[in-house]
Image 1 (cartoon, rainbow, N blue to C red):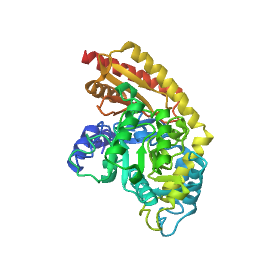
Image 2 (image 1 turned 120 degrees about the horizontal axis):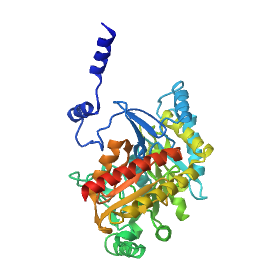
Image 3 (image 1 turned 120 degrees about the vertical axis):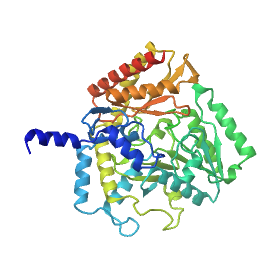
Image 4 (image 1 turned 30 degrees about the vertical axis):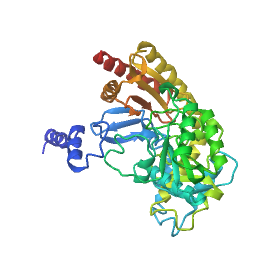
Length: 444
């Protein structure tokens, strides 16, 4: 075969994004959909390349997972080294030193001075499930209070806790009982701290005796709900209420943890010590591991064998997580997250000045967990989901990956790697500005 014919044969074998999307649609359940028809071939740092060789800047990081960037050399090296020793033995049968070392470090990093203990699982939803189990075991109570707009996972218990129906809860009920809900304070949507606390007081007077409430669970910054930071005064008051009634306060830090918000954990902004804290996502640079860290006396309420899982705290995940903690410290990435948020905020304010009728709010005061809320007529009461879809499509077409969230599907979220350079931030925001202008022009 001639060189030309060989090259033509290779080209003929190339399968592009469209073809892979067709094959995915035919082979995989439609419920496991994808935001963009972009099939990734490789990734490094803040850049990814699809199967057609096109480069993208990644402002999504797998939903706040690769905080240290794709395939950080130190994380990659730690995993490779671990693979020379052990891939699995089950932590509940024959444990390994890396799990103990990781637990020790997490216990030290968790907010507050109370002695801590840790347990490991594989996913964020598992962590939340186990936090509920631990709280009920410790208190001997049944009731759980969650908040509107909260997202806690896709299992049946965590869906019951989640305060957003579409697409997560649609046609999946009935959900577990003894879950109660209160409004989450969002000033821009007319829900004050006082209104939220009054509703909670009413809940305790009408549906759930606080003496029968095992736990309250909340995100210090809501994720899927729209990237709304919990007000400091409100969080501190919840801490007081939980202390008054012996209720376990659970901070769901699955998306906010490991430097994402400019603190190691977002609860630190309010200066509170959660009783239990769930973590996953940014914990291990893309390798599956999750956990619950909490006050030792509460964590030890469960009898031996009551917690765990076959893949809980895998040796690979533990090795990666230890490397992530090293990288966060050595490269100053927690502080870097604050600089990233400031740089995004300045640039996005410039976009807002051009389109004040389309951008209702910018949230960039929690490190590299940044949001832009799209509206009509400059009103937060008029969510603009159609514009969001158009902006996402334009960004993806131009080589920038961004994500959506929000109760009304109108919030753009930016979750860049904490290792991203200023040049890459500026390049990506330049693309975003062009994409926004194109989408806004088409919508007008």
